[in-house]
Image (cartoon, rainbow, N blue to C red; front, side):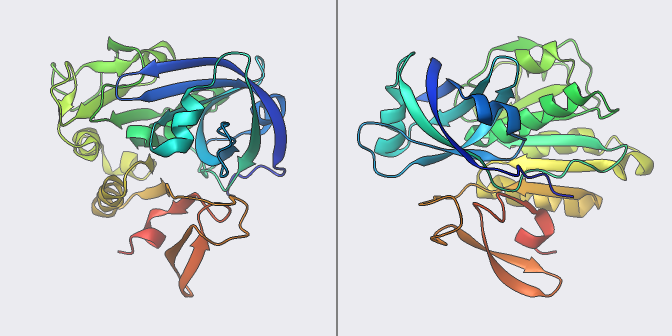
Length: 291
């Protein structure tokens, strides 16, 4: 079963907080009662950016907090729409449509979720790691995140051991550490405590320490730039493990009407064109990068 919210809501939300990080990266917190209750990992919202920007922007949920009735989004300024969004201040109102899309399938029993996120592709997989940890159903997620910009999160020297990691590769995200989720970071830049290289290579350092029985329980969940997704799919192929990819695509309507976000997908019955907004954004890796 693929997780998908039954209803898409349009609601007026209120800006609670907007935090700017290096590299024109922002974490936006909105009060959004309906969306906060129903959003699942891998789904996204279609957000009005204000300033008379005609088209909304699709943003993957970073978190959804039912108790506080808030949702969070991580984004980087790319174009006038997200630049306008970055100017919103606490108390401002913004229209939000969501949750939209087909999210991650995480119902495989006794699985070991491996989340791999790159850049602004981090939100859906970070959301998934925290969500599965909170479910307390025996899932033990492990996270690997990569960025060429400074990470838009508070970081810390991790006290959680991760097999295959060198002693100087010990930096984690504070939120992951506080939830006791093993996490390591990668970058091609010289960030302290980070693996110097691609995040998929970092993940492989851990994966290759696993036994055959452990590998059977692994599911990779990845989101990020296309080369990173292709590398994640290749990693899954080499080790013969399941892999789900969350795609990033420009969208005009986000509800399947305009077909402006179609991608080629290989299915058992042949090649088909699927809409990222409603058929995805999550797809099986083999359908996007056939073996």
